[in-house]
Image (tube, rainbow, N blue to C red; front, top):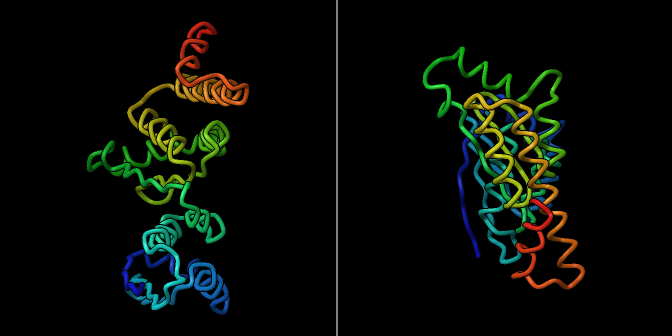
Amino acid sequence: MSFEQVVRIPVERVGALIGKDGATKRFLEGEMRVKLEVDSREGLVTLRSDSALGVDPISATRVIEAIGRGFSPQRARRLLDEDIALEVVDLRDYAGGSPKSLERIRGRVIGLKGKSRRVIEELTGCQLSVYGRTVAIIGEASQVRLASDAVGSLATGSQHKMVYNSLQKARTKRKMERMFLWEGTSPENIEEKLEKLGH
């Protein structure tokens, strides 16, 4: 299956994609079994594959998008796993056209010395990249949804403590569900048990 796909990334991220002496580009081409053609002045990356052995074009495209949104190539390559999702939250949706509001929201998502971003990552198992006007999230699909909701809550002014508590409850519930499934509890009875435990 041959394909060709063009992805635009910020010009300042082209260096991260290419790497020293082209090492990162070669690494990605090997991992994804594609050829990358990079227009460093425009930030246009063309992915080409003539091989039936090439990876899924959508996964390869997401890897390039993730690098463009601030992730290291090593973190971005996680997207080659079909169970791993990428979501990009545009903070302008919350800031309107105000650069001051955008900066304030970015600050809330990152937190003092990166605390807020770190707590969201720890409680969801996701990785976050706050870059420019976006927050990009890589992780398991259900967890990406949780992290995205947390970012949205912070962007709309929710207290950090409330957001953390909500994520902590979701993590506890997930652990309990896994434990019950491990014990062989039927899916119908899991909700009942969780309710009795107050989750």
